[in-house]
Length: 505
Image 1: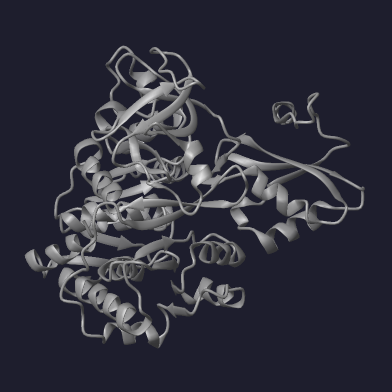
Image 2: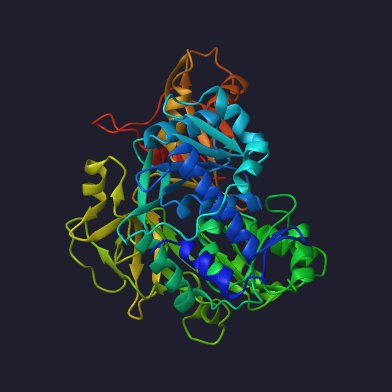
């Protein structure tokens, strides 16, 4: 089903319900939210030929216009390409070219640099800060959304892969529908008096949690800062009440530290769903001690968005069960519409407690990678998505992550793949070899460290400047370690385990 149908229905059932907030200021009720989205969809269709066979990129920082753009694209039946606003403009351009999108909806702050490196396929760039956006508002709205069947791709999410180049994850209408329904049954109920606050990027998990709040006629709040500021979030929560939000573990830790330092308890916050990286048991225990019974954990990935396991608040807050600490260290149990198992490398199911690769099957699993059948075949086998994460499942179904089979680094909730950084550093004259690894960090989860073999004339400043010019800032190494040679095995493979051992304090 087309997600815009949810908005269309809500706008007719509760037209006067408050919908979009910029800080504490309501900028649209549901009738106006729907009218704007329907007008954007009509404009995209009539002026730019956008329809079910097209893909439209959205490259914006958090703002209420983001939701209008999402539903506007879906109103005319097209697929959205949500691009992380933290990416370098060249990285965004690569995604647009790979997806062959001819329209991009942007904001001036990051859209202007994109225009300078835009690929040939991109014919139209419309900024939410320009008159062209307001012109779309004046277009006669579509009477209702274009029909979309369950198997149609509507969300083309780019996630980095071990090859160092992003892969387009094809998410269908059915995938998102089941993700939303799983939220109601496994994560948290939603009422009309609730609100979702977008402090994390709307291109990722935070934005994907909009659907449940549209369905239930709840409010959508974008902080004035457009991002994560603990003081602002706690102030908004106290003022607007019944706030839910998605947060990476590092965000939770910062929020708790601020609350504790200022004698606050999270008043006004209903639910914080945390995901996107490891949450240390000591940190979540303190979070519950300081802010109370407000936390839920979700485990998913781009290929199965927010839809693998969940650890509801009753388990996060439990201190009575004899194995409560083990459960708290887990990522919970399988969500309602999926099966989760632990497989050995040959695809055999492992017994309880054994460590293997986490696999998942069900209607939240992607349909495949965009124009990449080889990668699809390696990731989805016999109906199972191989997540690349290593873990174990106990006899009650609680899944605990142990390690990743890939070398992905998770820093501040963002995925960083070493080869992507390595390839950029190897472009520099004088750099002969590079190996990038993650170092555990109490604030960020992990930080990026690059081991560099060079001719002796390359400096850390030189390396850092090149990274800033070519990749997103959050991907660049926090430390450069110059080394005479990289440790390797007999086959010439770099031994990253040995490099990580050099980072132990």
